[in-house]
Amino acid sequence: MKKLFLASMLMVSAGITHADTQLVNADGSELSAICIAAVTSREAMYDTAAELGVRDFAPAEMRCNGQTLSRFVSLHRAKPAVVAPAGFVFSNTDDTPVTELCMAVVRSEQEYLAVKERHFGNEAGIEDQVRCNDMPLASFARKYRTPVPAVSLR
Image (tube, rainbow, N blue to C red; front, side, top):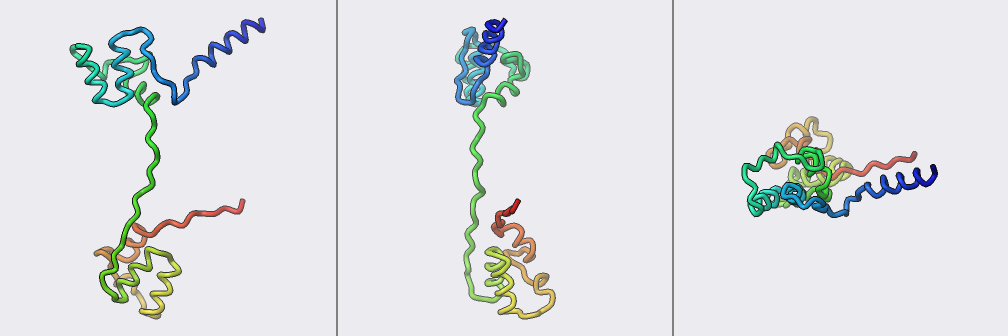
């Protein structure tokens, strides 16, 4: 009984695939070759179908290992790396207090408050009057300010 259990566990573990595992056309069929090419790219799939002379190729009707082609591809295609969003470069073209305020608001709340106090004092509603790149100050800050990473003390 233990030998049967061990043998079945080995077969199950051998069937588990890893993301780095290459797909193999075990049955040598044209459709399997197309399934494998589809994992690479859509263009590779159509090129393979054309090279193999498969007529009336209908990807929506194809099955790969009992799954729809799109499901098979989503399971086996390498996931793209997460790319950090591009940074923004701001150009300070003049030395006006409004430009300085716009530059400060994207750097930090503290710098914004210091520049606001230095140039505008307690002037009421300055946030509603200032526009940066033709955007209201608050919208400009939300769009371009670098978020501060959250720190948890738990």
